[in-house]
Every structure is written in C-alpha cells, then in structure tokens.
Amino acid sequence: MQRKLSAQWQISLVDSILRGQFAIAPMMLAGLFPQIQNIITNKNSLADQPQLTEVPISAYLEGNSNSVEYTGKKTDQPIVAVIPLVGTMLKYGTWCTYGALEIADMIYSASMDPNVCAIVLDVDSGGGAINAIPPLKQSLLFAKETGKPLIAHVDVACSAALWTISYCDERYIDNDISGMIGSLGVMMSFFDVIPYYESLGYKHHTIYSDLSPDKNDVFEKALKGEYEAIKTEMMNPAALQFQEEVKSNYGSALKVDTPGLMTGKTFAGQKSIDIGLANGYATLHQTIQIAFDRAKANEFLKS
Image (cartoon, rainbow, N blue to C red):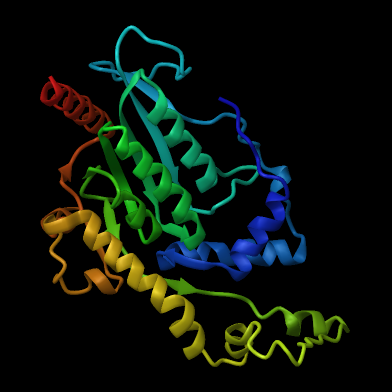
C-alpha cells in the first residue's frame, strides 16, 4: 500500500507544534522543543530525512512468527493485521512520520478486508496532539462494528495513546521493564515568537475589528500570562472528555479511584495491570495469538 502524504504537511506540522493542544507525556513534549527551534531558525529540513513511502501494515498467519505481505488480496487462511501507532501522535503525516489520518486509513482497510479476522494495534507512544484523536477514534469504532477483535499491544501508551487504546477490546503490556501506561491529562505549550522577531527589527501589530472583541481572546490573555480563560474554555473540557471516555471505554475493569489515575500519573507494567489499564503481559506474538483465539471464539458464538 502506498502512502498518501497530505498537501502542505510542513505547514500543518509547524502549526501543530507551535499552537496545538496536547495530551502528551512531559518527556515526549520536551523532545519537541529542539524541533521547534530548528524549524524557526531553519537549521534543518525534514525533507533531508529518509522518506516513508509504504503503509506499514503487517500480516500474520496463525502459528507463524514471521509476517507475510499484506496485499488485501484473498488468502487461504485468516490473517491478523498489525498496525503500528508509534512516536508522537499528529493528525497529519509528514515526510518521515505517519499521521493519525494515515493510521486511521490502515484501520479502515484492515476492518473491511475479509481476510483479516482480527486487528492488533501495536502501540509505543507518549501521546501527542488532541486533534489526532478523532480520526483514530472513528476508525476504531468502525472496526468494532465489524465484530473483529481489536487488541492493543503496548510498550508505552501515555496520554493520547491511552485515549486511543481505550477503544480496544483488550490491552496487553509487553514487559515489566519499559512498559508504561497513563499520563491521562491535557496540556498546552507554545512559544511567544514576537520578541524574537522584534529583536530582528520587526514591529508586531495585532488589530481587531470593533465588532470582534472576543476573537482570539483566550490566546491574547495567555500571551500576557493570564491562563485561566484558556484552561476554562479549552483545556478543562478536553480533559474532562478524556476522563469520561476512558472510564466509559474501560468500564468496571478500571479502578478509577486509584490515586493519580485521573489526574495524570503514569503507571509501570505491573501496576498498570493491577489497576485495570492492561489485561496482562504479552509479547507482540503472544498478542497476535490472543487475537486469533478471540476471533475463533467469536466465530464459534455466531455458529
């Protein structure tokens, strides 16, 4: 399958980083700051990085640890499709990263493929932009409607990645060393670049119509260090929706009264299992077998 890179992806990337609202683990956000600086100062170009050209859906036959080519054509045996959700989550794909829209297309493709009996979402992400959630949510809900098991295999699933895996039927954490789930919360971080350009001799002016007194009001206040409006009008509603959807998707299995769970704490492997964020430990290949087993159980119940 060939990638469909969005037009003007460079502008979308800069806009997401500079002005986006994020559900992301702090250590991941810190890594974005050097990228922001390089973009502003033109010190590097993403076009110099190796280009991703193929959509990376992997397919597995039962009992075979080696992947087979995913073609969408009829196979003699059912396959489990493995779709990666790796790195910082952004809505639009870039030259060298997959966007949520592309990953959602992979999920739709696997959901509609009659050869695919189940889908494994292979997750290693500290989260990302809030606007990456809707396309993934929509595609995962579509996949669930097909009746195919939807299983998450997790190394790290924080913030937006946690929001995403909450739509899966089951979630398995890979190991007790680097495995981590949590960081349920919303944050926003942006640079005030006006002083930088003023240091170069530019004078900045922002003028609003007399008929538009509320336009960009929360952002203008934030630039002045007044954060209450932007938290009340934008961030708090998003954080509340995040909490409610995770609680609803997990159901009674999640120990919602765990200290820190709903307020942004991150939980290592065994603790994440104990409080219901994960069903247990499983490697990728063990998760694939679980997906095959769930698919066979579903078929048996239909017969």
